[in-house]
Image (cartoon, rainbow, N blue to C red):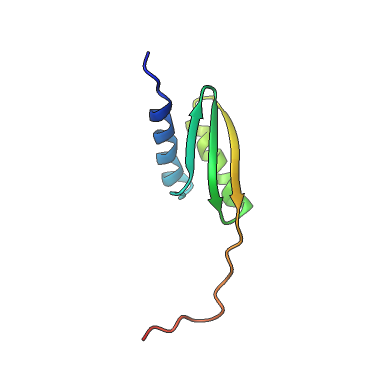
Amino acid sequence: MADMSGYLAAHIQERLAAEAYELGIRVDVRGEFVHLRGEVVSEERRRAVEEAAREAAGGRRICNELHVVAVPEPDGEEQIS
């Protein structure tokens, strides 16, 4: 049987884009484990990505290695000339 890890990783990435609205998450499938790597802006986003991946992973264990990074709010309005 062919190695389906690449197909599964792509499937999970599609679900993350559609359900968690995250495009920059790296997904690596190794046996029964799915590793999620990348950065998100809040703990809430981190949990949403993990949940969407869990639903698409077909019972595999999720290793959530996502990092929450602070995104500062703008100082004021941006001036466009």
